[in-house]
Length: 104
Image (cartoon, rainbow, N blue to C red; front, top):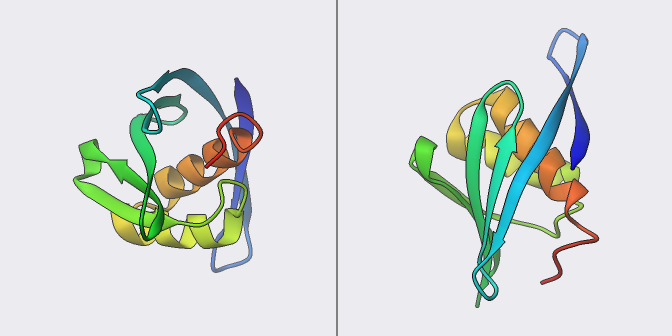
């Protein structure tokens, strides 16, 4: 599944790139997602008593996220969690692409 990403830097410059969700594995409410873009990113998303979460093992990071289609909130949280603007943005846009497929 293809998706597009964009970010606006502090100087007002906008940058865009494409990504692909290569594989989705469903473990009964916990999903493992493989994203290919500027880098390869493995993400686990699931639901807990406190809401939806995303874990990115390669970055040794995780955070709570909003609904899958909430680009603003998810981008902010993911960038802070993994300390990488491009990859955090990529994950947020990939999650938005999955909003109609994965329901929590």
